[in-house]
Length: 485
Image (cartoon, helix red, strand yellow):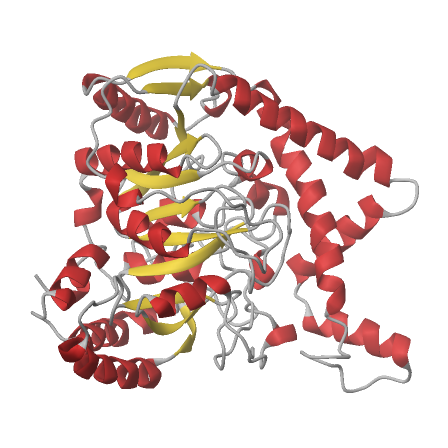
């Protein structure tokens, strides 16, 4: 098998057994990238020269090292809202087009300690605000399964690089579905950890109480491997939790006999696409055949999730993005008369339409006279959504839902209707509001396009969702199919 088709775990084994050199692996992925990137446009910044230079150093090191780290010499892409020292971090925005950080995010530090090699920074919806990667200030990324369709968002570039074989794994961020939704659209695995499981230090903030960094990979086993490296307490992130981190690889290959699966009726409405419903419920039957027990549950406050999310997230965004004013760093307008016009022109020219829309919504709901009516009420509903999940987890071990209402939509299909775009995250936002872990894994194909199944777990129980997702993957075998780019 060609090296670019190998999983992260397989590549790690080849390097650690000294069967293949890091430079051979990196070169194989660069060649694959050179063949397909011009069609997909997943990278904002490519680091081929840095990658090859680092790989050649590791060729020498692998001979002398007594213990070879897990990711030694393996290429991984990083979403372009995660800080990388000395490499542009743009958030796919004109505002930060030329911004080069002087520090690494904690997750990048941990990947470096494990020996990874960065392949580049991937495209996203500007400041992670979007569901299609059409809101990038630079260009639209395309879905490797159908170049006329979106890869999802906001981590569309990260998902597309993995799906097309340009990298074996990437990092994304998830505020309302931005890892899981593009993973579903691109037929790969996307894991959103529990809030507080993975450090947010170095992640450019969108909505601080919702954001989480997580892996996008070809296989569930690879996601478990990545979680082993990036999870754990970080004193630089006050929201990071000191909860013991298990070896997630121990959950791969486990039997699910006796596991209790909940199917929430609110996630399978009458208007859900019939093919999506059938594919998911057939998979659930297969899991039942392996010894899992299945019961219908109710999450009644789910119906308020989209409205609640689109009050809380824009409110936090309006606060977080206030720092981009043209004074300290980032874009500054050239033609202004005083400090007020400099602020106004800089933000008007530096931010795209969707970012400005969310800033205005957030500023409005936080304004005097509206805070109690909107923001405070949304936080109360958020608590009700969390309580729904906690009651459900008294009866079941995991919850299974569709990741998205349908397969990837065509480029431009929803861009003129923000509400329809927001509804593409209808099955993912409640998990962020409830701070829970969830994973999307491909479970079938609808008319040749991937369908994602979402497994939701209790707080800090990423192990159980990995076990279930692994069984889904082994049954569906979608991970063996590479799109014909």
